[in-house]
Image (cartoon, rainbow, N blue to C red; front, top):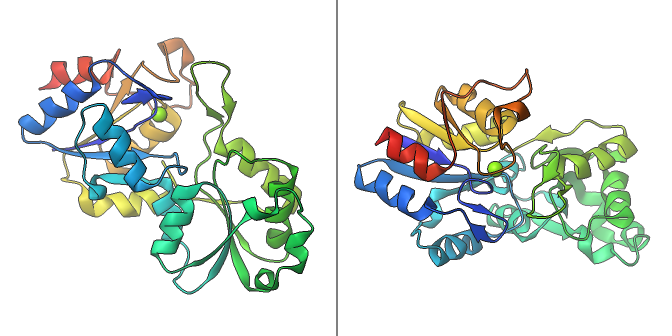
Length: 265
Ligand SMILES: [Mg+2]
């Protein structure tokens, strides 16, 4: 069986590991299951994910990490030029596909500089993910190329970015700003949308379980790939009262990944 594990809210919350997560992964592997770590957070690089997992006692290979950044990169053909308002993970995924990347971060202080950039006329794809420099400059630069005809790709439509304190706007909120300003609807790449489903499909066993804290992304992904959905209450969903009537009903519910794995293995 393949277990598709979300990261934020399942393995860790921000930088704090969720108790028992490493033991749970060890237990799954010991029982002969394959594990994939699948996240909509497109900011870290794959090597950063491997390192962060290793620090909390989970050994993972690069091929076990599947991100919305990689999914977004599958939409852009090699040799194209893309404007990226996003983090390092997105730049890495596109560069690996031999896409020429212009980072919107270069224009944070001088958005008008984008108008004079000679590469601007080649931009046929604008990819927007979560970025720490989000603001009027990154939205203005991204929206300008979409208005000129580039395809708007969003890494994921998560509304919020959970932190132990005040939640931050998620990629969905950031992409909405570019979408509203340019008048174009985005194509989404991450969970539960088709590009990441296509990326995951060859890696599944046909008897799979998706574990996540967000029914609208993790639960919908499970439905799309025909997997069981295990909801954990260690992230954005802390009780059944948080579930929206539109959300897919979980097949399994537990306080944490550890509790769920202990019950199932
Ligand atoms: Mg999550």
